[in-house]
Image 1 (cartoon, rainbow, N blue to C red):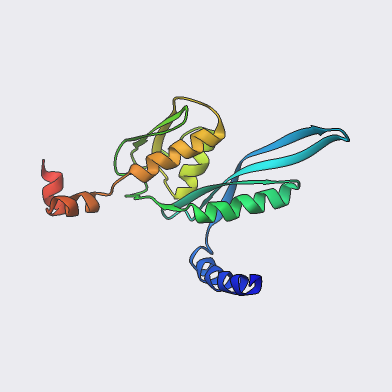
Image 2 (spheres, rainbow, N blue to C red):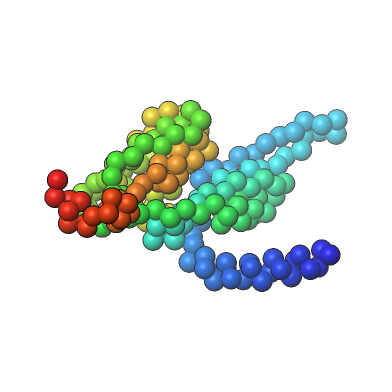
Length: 179
């Protein structure tokens, strides 16, 4: 039975690999954890990775293992499962948006061409991986990279493109931007 499952998964994995072949990963946080046992300390690692194609797809993943390389590989696999699509218009986001996860709060604003990514650490990794070239961003709550990354992804998920808004209202794009 295990062989049958692995064959099925292998087939789907190949299709997905072709779809996500141009994804690049960035290591946001690597943490060494020590578990104290009777025999001494046992070290393990946890990694937070952001994965994106710089064309509007971005995701994050968490991996834990006794070895650093294995830990990062697990995080990348997890990130592939959590990809979201982000609307990007002329290198920036369509509108201002707030995101929240736990105590992590972020604010992202569209910026003029040539501004660049004005964001700190964990937010910068997410925005650059998504392919946003001009944005103003501020982390307002927790500075914990896990919460900041998740809050940034939350803000990016909430973004709506002008095409979607015009379609939902049943009007043309020109009429949307008149008022």
